[in-house]
Image (cartoon, rainbow, N blue to C red; front, top):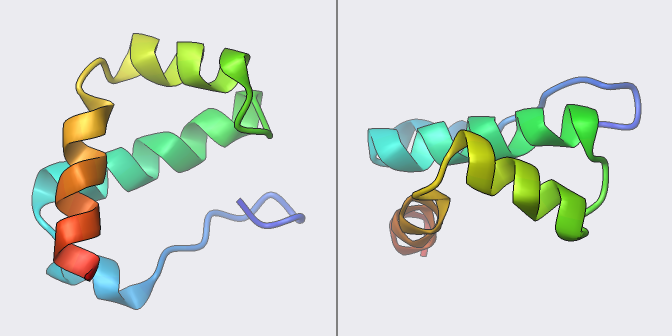
Amino acid sequence: MSPAGRLLLNRRLVQAPVDAIDYVITHELCHVAEPHHGAAFFDLLDKVMPDWERGKQRLERAMA
């Protein structure tokens, strides 16, 4: 999220697998409630997307 509260996505994201895109959008939306990458953020991410680590790994491979 930008400081103004806008969701900004990298244009290259359209080349990523769908589950990686889902991860990015879910990750960014979790920042609406939890702005920092603290324990509360990851608790929320785990709750709304239990398999988020798989999406993150696929994103990292796709963007490498």
